[in-house]
Image (tube, rainbow, N blue to C red; front, side, top):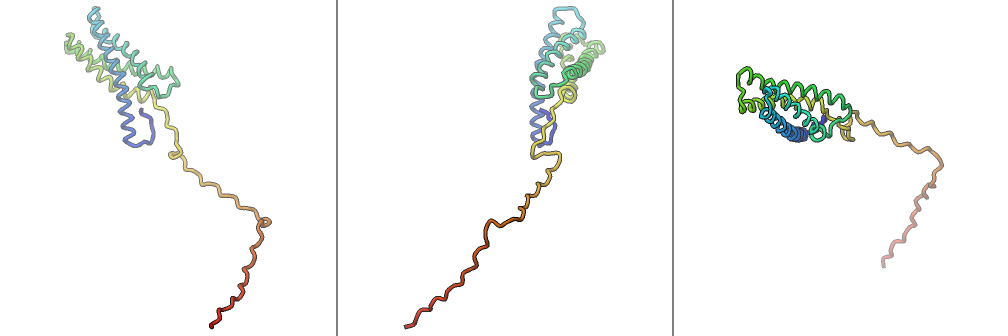
Length: 192
């Protein structure tokens, strides 16, 4: 929950931990989809490694959008769905290039194109792209809703209360009190 605000450091850290956990759950599912589709394509077709990886990444991106929108970032602003989808596609595309760039460099630059090497470098590419995706999705795509001001955290100071109205002079509802009565002398006791 990375909502902006003036919460304590501990509250912000807890919110970030929850956000990372939800992002990780959705991302973990995305990794399984990505690697599963990648290996399925590799074992059933003659597509080149990077092409198979790009297809797998696109399938994982679609899966991840649903998970992010309806699970990890469901508490975020939902207005502007076209903007959100556009930004998600752009940042996911950049992540796709990062992820598959690592695999491309290993496969065609270093000549490591075996089944295990392809999976290892695909996983390394996914990890590198995940850091970028986390930052970009939380910063640009699924933006936090602003925190509503509470009565204790107002942006403007409270004005001084208005003075109480003074009563208007008028007839006294109570008459003046009676003067103190004069005490009567009490006879002193006689000495006998």
